[in-house]
Image (tube, rainbow, N blue to C red; front, side, top):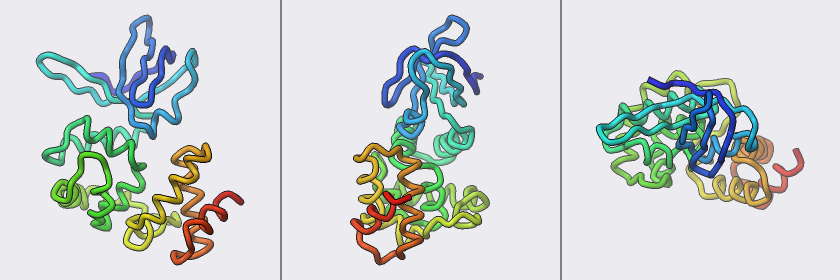
Length: 201
């Protein structure tokens, strides 16, 4: 079972990377949140791997952070109706911290925004994973991440993040800046004000 690979980036796409590991080229599926952190072609890269073996194929799914790989694995193995491809789309749409917080707060409306996730599937995510993310959810940590019920479930939060991404910021940095901005201005601030505040930091 392959669980970790370290090699040289040969080719990189939004949802796939090819790595040379000891002279062997591995094609690895990755979410956009990992693609944003992949080194340039020719540079060394380390990925935590989830391998899926079937009778006629073998697929590798890679993540920069072990925590992302483990959460991906949790979704695939514990939630019925969600396979690796849909799980990859989910992690491409939102970071693990937001997903954990949404599950912990039973925010099915936010989860339903992920590709391939309808209301019933979002409810299954909550039912199957709520207890498993309770100990690691940002809602229980000391970090200042707003509650999904007041911020994450609103289009205002997503629009603000999308605005920063359009300006060239990476997803993790955008989330951090917008979260800090909302903490400073309050949940009632307009999207424009939130974005302007985020650009100051």
